[in-house]
Image (cartoon, rainbow, N blue to C red):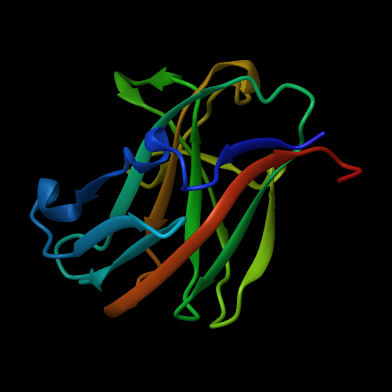
Length: 165
């Protein structure tokens, strides 16, 4: 049975924050808004000096028994990344578990298997224990596709699913 993480029509579905690459000297700018039951992540990616922007929200969840995330999205044709955070730390830093997904101008359901998540710290692959699905504490969306310019991602919902859904 699917586990719904976000439908963007509940008060706690609007707690999304932005982190831009300015934390490391970059000039990318991201914006996030939740309106009309849709999350809208927009901005401009600048690869010189950084090259990322992300939006993230807290979400405590036990996803044990599921094998993938599904997101209903539409966008500007660029690739985005989804992140699940279980609180794992390595080398004194948070370990990011991310995988990319495509977008088109039409609403599409994309499936991101947990097996596609790669463990990174500041974008560099690291050895880390497998993700602890019982301890999910946040979900994030990244724009970091190494292409300068504007982007748009709209998300209708995010859920965790098993193999048979």
